[in-house]
Image 1: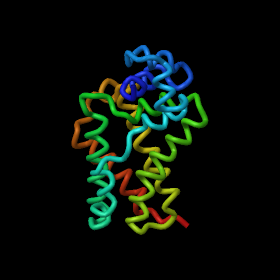
Image 2: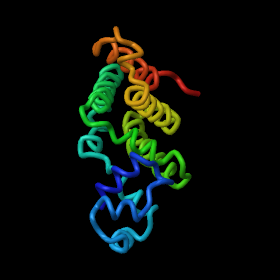
Image 3: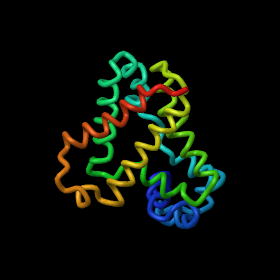
Length: 180
C-alpha cells in the first residue's frame, strides 16, 4: 500500500490521489488502507522517506571537514541523487505536496528540519535555520532543473566535473558567508 501511495502521489499529486486509487494499485480493499493509515494525510506522511543512515551520520562527518571539502561532499551527494537512474524522491515529494498546505509542512519538515538543519547546527554556523532553508532550496531547485527541465539538453557542454564545481562553490558560499 505504501509503495502504491508513493508512486501515485508522485504521479498525480496529493489532490488527485485518492484512497480508492491507492487501494486499486495495491490490490487491496480501500477499507484496508484506512484501517492501517486512518486518512490520506496520514498515508502521505507515512510515505515520506525517513532520513537514511548515511544522512543521519552526515552532519558529524561533514563538521570534521574544512568548509570547502564539506561543500564538495554535499555537492557530490546531491549530484549522485539527482543523476541516479531512478528519479529522486525529492521531485516526487514536491509534486505531491504542491497542492496541499499539510503536505507542504511535511516537505518543509523533511528538507529543512530533519535533513539540513541538523547538518548546519553540527557545523556550528550562525543563523542555522536560514542556511538550512538556502541549502534545501539548492537541493530542490537542482532536482527540479535536472528532472523536469532536463539540464543536459539546456546546457549540453556542462561536464560532470564543472557541474560539481559550480554546485560545490554555491554550497560553500552558503556555508561560509557571514550572515548578520
